[in-house]
Image 1 (cartoon, rainbow, N blue to C red):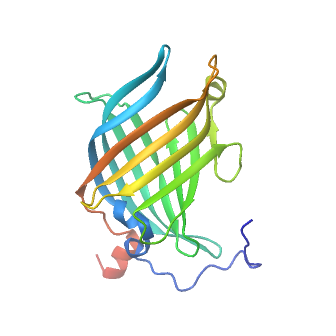
Image 2 (cartoon, rainbow, N blue to C red):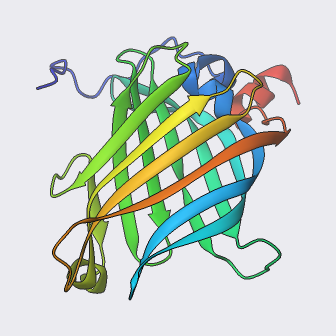
Length: 214
């Protein structure tokens, strides 16, 4: 069990407001990215379906965040996926990536417009080129919450994401979401993977821009 100080109210007084300089392993994924070789393996009536997708993801620095003495640096993200050559949304997702320098904890929050949210956690060194996060159904700290229909029909029992920073500056993710599908005996591994290439650099966070006078 993690220990916390007795004083849970006093915030750090020496906060560096430059988020980009304090993101640890998340610095490598800051910016705007595109990927054209996404693969989604999803459940269908007759088993599963393998679907290609094209993705655009934006991760922009936010100002430092405190919970009393706890300090996070982070990225606000939006991810939008479509089928190749299509316009309609295939998948949409928003959330935050957070880094806690004092502990090496990485957190991903995510929300999707089918009525589901999750909070995943992992640990890494500041210069790590690969890291993994996970969440599971049930806990009230790092868990998964879904609508009644999803709980009844496509219950999400666990979520795992592995991120790898590639030598050429791109990054690759692999997600494994384990589902219990009504009427099926075996869990289903719903997977997504893609390699993203940067198309634009990140902006500085608002406080850092203000300190620089622009």
